Length: 394
Image 1 (cartoon, rainbow, N blue to C red):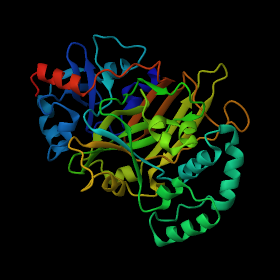
Image 2: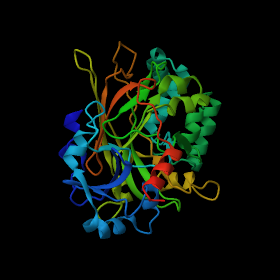
Image 3: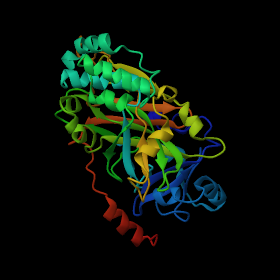
């Protein structure tokens, strides 16, 4: 993990030009909003008490650039990154938290054809990984693999829906994959996401699960997308496959969400158009004596709904977010590589190291454990409000 927690690995390739906002835990102080440069971690508290407040400014990037020369230095970036490893933290040095705080943590599901087919397979297999391969062959034989040209909600999509219903293979996942309404769900709670270097959790009763490498948009209360980060939407394929009504249990558990390492603010050098072209890479390295390595990726160029469409389906007249929200955009990554035997596909084991990266946003790294063994979530909104009041920031 430590090799992923260095400035050269964790920061964007153009880090000198990037405006990277994060949060660190500072012993004796608590969570502190920071600006991260290739060399230094700078205290942003004088500009905004929380990340949510910062993103509400009329022009966050412009405000941060204007304040840079006056920001107090907290530590060297290399020190903070190294100290963010869950098992190597020195309490007298800061370590990185998830960069968001009061924002709701939302996610869009079934936004890529590849993952849509895998969701249908999970449903048909009733969450049993051993049946996945035979179900996959049967589903693809009827549906086909090339649905990428179909625009969700279009007349063509409606015609395909009628055909699939007639053939008895229509699915709730196809409904949100090619229907007019996107799947937008609550992934986790404000302040509960893990940051880079931390452990992420899988439910101890899950036997079929996987990471989901994603881009996460930072959206303010006005529905404006003002930045982006990397995310790992840890997913329990068996729980969700048994019933869509178990989505909450499949998605929202202790340590089951990771965002970071930073939010890159939109400016002249990085915008939503850059996000639309992001190519994500993911690697899972196992703890086995004969190392297991899984590599995959997700290309935003292949997303079936534009990111702004997903934002507009999440916020509007029907739903407001006064503290803003973070929105996972979904993934085309759906691992099928066998790990524990032929036809068993992929599932996590405790000790997996997961990295998610893209040149524009850097690298997010986490170690896998079970939710009951991960660090309990104890610092919630009331604790943050007390902390800010004690520091004179409210």
